[in-house]
Length: 173
Image (cartoon, rainbow, N blue to C red; front, side, top):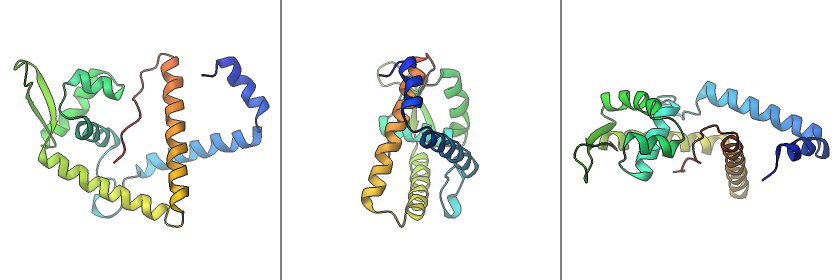
């Protein structure tokens, strides 16, 4: 893993113009992604915020879990999960149930309605990705996914090294 000293050297050794273009394109991507929320197409476009999508996706991929476990797996604190999950429970997308081994503990579980809604959003987002990359080859799509995943992992590792809580790479669907 590069040290901060190595990072400084990399900017002078590498192509400064290319690194300037990269940081600019990442900033533009972040702004556009936030503006559109990369929500998808059709009636479900922009109909689920990022926090809800990530929580539902995590519960779908990892199964029922308590608030603390969900917070830890997402790299956020328990109070944030509690705040973000409350509207999901209120709308019936997530259920609170008793822990199977400790009836006093509560676990969060994706409801059938939540799974259905998540699948709608995933489908809409897949359609958007297909439209945005319609003229890309399968190899280009795969390379982009590989590089974007690698970039996100590097960001997470950097934040973890600085003591900033970060979520692990989100599972894809």
